[in-house]
Image 1 (cartoon, helix red, strand yellow):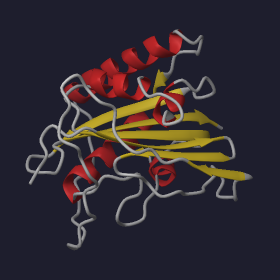
Image 2: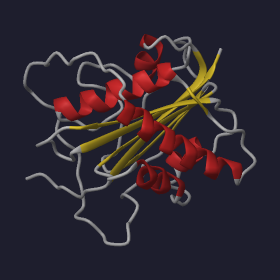
Image 3: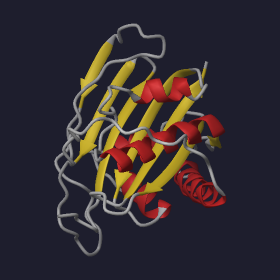
Image 4: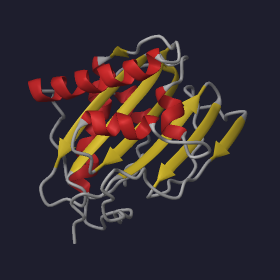
Length: 217
């Protein structure tokens, strides 16, 4: 049965040659990948136990099992005025929080928007919630495929949230040690960001959100 108001978060952060992965129901497995494909000097894997608690606690969400059906060909993701509005709202919220910590504002990047939309759409249409797709594509693969060459990158994903403000607030309001999404949000070394949303009727969580961060080479 679909949990209509379930809130779930997951995160992968790649900083220089250090990869940090954190998840909030479901927990993601650790991956290691630097921008040039070489082995990182260190890999840190962090796991968190639950999603942030909203004012009216929803039912707890669990990971959507990976579909065993043959892969479906998804249409090429395209932006729209609605997508642009959501991305602008997410950017404004993100930069408002970053300004409190003297971090430079992030710049919206069309290639990162494209990578984020591709992932939100793929999760919604293929019934999974993870940074890596069932076909094995990683966040770094998607960012490179969109034409962005990075020196560092990070990704936050969320599902079930009703607005971009709710997503960004949940990321920001995490507390240590389970604050990987917040640390991505407030990483002053990251320069560009893309944000996207996709809704699929009948899917596990309905709305799927992706925020991709990067710094160019």
